[in-house]
Image 1 (spheres, rainbow, N blue to C red):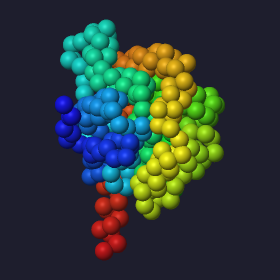
Image 2 (cartoon, helix red, strand yellow):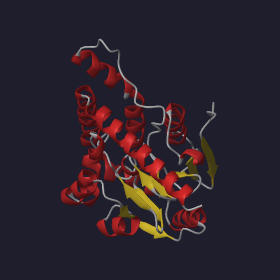
Image 3 (cartoon, rainbow, N blue to C red):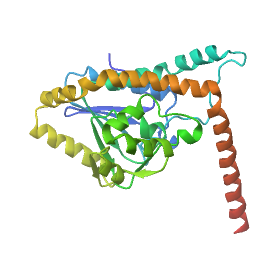
Length: 280
């Protein structure tokens, strides 16, 4: 029985399945509901009898700002030991790990269509795993994990290195600088950059042309042959990253970093309001 979705748009047309993140008011940042929606949508398309391509994209001007943390970071019970905290975080990451497993094992050709900027998890979760990455001109990717006391999540360190080399992956993932999709195309992470105006139409026409020229089953088998030698390493990297991320939270570093960042943003916002009033 097909699933119903709360925070994404699910469509199937002409052998193309589309998963569109649909929280544009929040820059398509995902909450628990959207995370579960994505797990269900990838599962549904994996078993769909007619599709060849699975396209992940976003509604609005952003692809995704990553995890929605406006409500703050969840914390384990205050009296937890270090071991209990570690187990609490590993359980907490179970939905994310199932999403990653389902993307790693996905049988259809996984196309990431970056309709706009991607930040945090939006810039790290999908780009290294996708089989094809298409992007709207002028968009950018940025991963500020290390500045927040975090680490590249769920195997991104390995998948990015596989796509563009270890040193370029380090440059992007360690330092948190903003990289244009045009630069990422030159580095090998992005396959093609299309005009931002009418981007979704350009993606659709590109994929329809591939379906006209190429046999769908052959494309899926080619994807399988490419990914089979990488699969086990990616699964191990996912667990290694979940372990490292959990340990960072046990140490408490992200909480202090997030607190300082929140105070900095609040201070900057207050300064802008004062300047606006003084200019009236």
